[in-house]
Image (cartoon, rainbow, N blue to C red; front, side, top):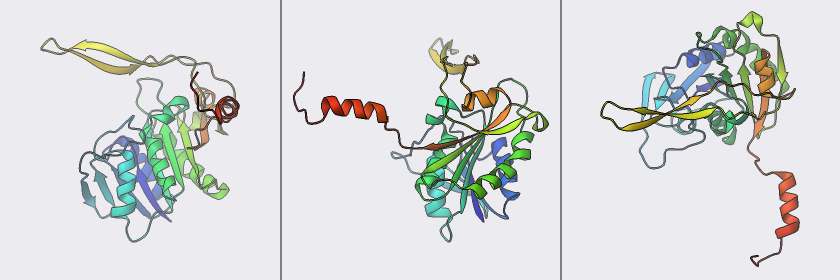
Length: 257
């Protein structure tokens, strides 16, 4: 089985080391194509106005001067030209990708890029709720068995699997739970205003750290309570109820109010 590893934290990220360990526990045909620099929050962006460059580190390790989606696209069309991967793993992200995170996550976006090109894809992320050292041992201990179970179970071709590991040591993780994407009841992102050395104003995004109060069955609840969250995601964003309601009011109409 050929596995392609990518991420959004960049080619030198510690989480990519964990991802490669997971992949090598599953196969001896492991390739890495990741962004040259950190691309957190890049979502599904593609580099359209600038040239892309591929840097080779060894026979199976490359970086791309672009976004996570660029990295997977270049891997599929310019690097792995002899045989496409059987599986794409993205991560392990240094921070959770749950609830609203998935819409801006470069980690999840890399998996969506792979899925859109016909390859089963899994995004993996490690939750961080404290300033302590990231617990990379948790995805390294549980990652390969979970991927094996997922591959055995299978999932639809238009679905990406989003795996999040809680901020706990491997032995403190209580269970694995298949979850739904949650929604935070507290907006965490804020922009802090600062001054540079010349008196100019600049802004730096940060997170409040305030936890929401999510319902059972969501990715948020699972991570808060120490369970590994597995959420099947897809790109169908149409809101069915709103579609039905608006169709009754607007279909066939050409006049403004």
